[in-house]
Length: 324
Ligand code: SF4
Image 1 (cartoon, rainbow, N blue to C red):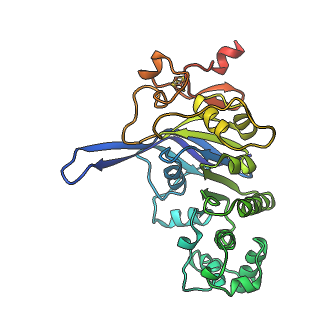
Image 2 (image 1 turned 180 degrees about the vertical axis):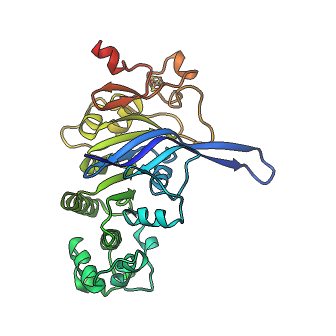
C-alpha cells in the first residue's frame, strides 16, 4: 500500500500569555511526530484531551502549518493553504468533525449542502443525481435530502456530513471525534458506515478519538499520544490487546472491552496533561506507576520494540536488542 499522508518529525508550537501583562510561554502542541496513513487503512489517534490529536488532524489537512518538519500528501509536499495546489489537494482530503450541526447551515435543505462541494471544486457531474447517490451511500433517502438539519437526528446529521465529504471522491478522510456526540447505539452504526465506505472506496482514514472502544472497532493501526508526542504506535490489534507503554496500558485497561471483566486494571492517577506545563524528562513520569529516577530527567525516544511497532519508554527493550 502507498503512503497517502506522511508527517515527518512535525512540530507545532503556540505562544500563549496569561492575562494582559502575563509572561509569554510556548506550548508545543505537537512535538516531533512522524506517521503515515496508507490507502485503504485507518490510523487511529488516541489520547486524552490536550494530547495534540486535533492539532495533528488540522496539520494533516494543511489547515495549520507545522513550525518544524514536513507534511507530504500523495508523495508531494503539502501546498500552502489558499493556493490552487492546496485547493486541489483539499478536494482529495475531506474531514468529518464532532459536531455535525455546527458543520451544516441550518437554513438550507441538506441535499443543497451535500452538493456544495461540486460547485466549490468545479466537478462536472449531474448534481441532483450525485447528491441522491451520496444520500443512498450513507443510508439516507431522497426525503432526508429535502429536510433541514434540525429536522434530522444527530446520527442522520453526521451521515449528511459524511455524504458531503464523499462528493469529491476523496482519497483521505480525517475524522476528529466523529461519533463522540452521538448515543452509543448510533455510534456503532456511523462507525460501521465509515468502515463500509472505506472497504468500497479504498480511502485512507485518520480517526481521532479519546474513545478506545470506537478506535478498536475501526482502526488498522493506532498511535497513542501524550502531551504532543507519540508514545506507542503499531497494529491496532497488538497495541490495544497488549499495550507496552505504561500510558497505553492505563488507557486500555480503563476502556470497556469485549470479553471477561479485567482484573488487572491500571488506574491513572494525577492531573490530566497540561500542554503549557510539560514535565521534564518523560512527560508521563508524574503519573507513571513504574517511573524510575532516569524518567525525571531523560525523555525516552520512540524506538522499534517489535516488527511494525514502536514505543517511547526507558523500561521497554528496543527491538534491535531483543533480536540481537
Ligand atoms: Fe514511565 Fe519512565 Fe517509561 Fe515514562 S519512561 S513511561 S515515566 S517508565
